[in-house]
Image (tube, rainbow, N blue to C red; front, side):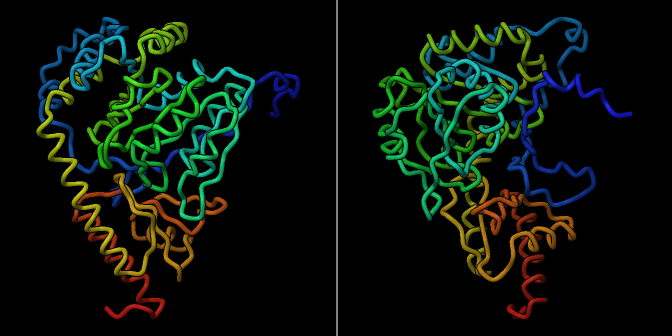
Length: 360
């Protein structure tokens, strides 16, 4: 039965974000930038010891234990840390809280596609300055009048990292609006914009447990900024949902932060595998920007991106592909274990060999 059209007149309609596929069968999963290694051992121990009777109680709405541990880890005040259900929740709260001008928010044309979704959902005007031919942000494009700025560093899906001088230049030219640096992949890259917090009250840095800390399934994200800005975020959060983080996430998140040695070991392993993967992909003729995340944004000049994507999928190897202007030839390939990357290379070699251009 068709729905009454009168019911649809005042219903909000948006173009939703499309997440990467989550196949349930056994595959080589290199499509959603998950960490191929388990969380810190303390996380497993905390789950084993968690008393199930505690689930009848609401979790701490202030997330105090996790906030305190993050504040100590990053050498900031407790009142500078805001936590939420993954960085997506944190970023959505940031859009709702900080982007309320009639002027357009600025973010790149090739970037995390959720930004357009939140802007559309909340009725926020926006403009998307184009990346240059090398997929780099042009800082001068962000000198214009605007209602706020957001961009990832490293950018997604390009994996390009910009140095702190670049970030500071944008901040210096935009001190009357909020500038959000989305650092989901910073641990694989270089210095964090957190170093600039003391100089710029308008800076918000957002990070996540989903990538470097191997906890995508726990959904933990956080923002760090000026205490007054964090208070504004919390005011919006408490007006929206007081109990955002569940009990296991609060407990396990704290345990993950405590184990710095394990964290650094996993980061090192992924970076080493990434650098090896770059060499292997170049050897097969692929081209890509210099990747500083836990993924590589690669294209082959001789083969169609969609066809490569489908060929890999037929062999149960999942990477990410967008049928979008400017990037339709590219595949975003997450860094898995060395064994998983080896399976990917074997499949690519078979594909190229079938085209008659590779001698096995």
